Image (tube, rainbow, N blue to C red; front, side, top):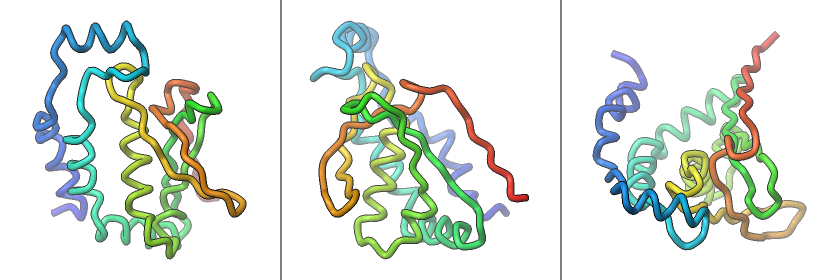
Length: 150
């Protein structure tokens, strides 16, 4: 049995997430990233929280300490630029909000404009806290980074 059996078992269950109706999808695509989206993100957020739980986050942190990295890309809509999140470093931090941030980043990375609303992420940098809207990283860049330990 794989250590990640729960994640593998998740794939067929993605049908639990309601599919948008064609008319709602058309309306959302015509309006862009405004108030409308084709699908509700709440079911996907619940799936992410169910499978990326404290145990999974602890395993990500353990692998980070071994030198493995897990990067997820999103697009910061406010700045119009790609953002690369180091989920291993977030998981390894002592921040009590780490799990929520990881869930937000994963949801944002799946939020295709028009299909899903942007995700509001609370960010702390250089001693300041502010909110940013994030969507799928493919909105600004189509790069895949594969980093190998030398």
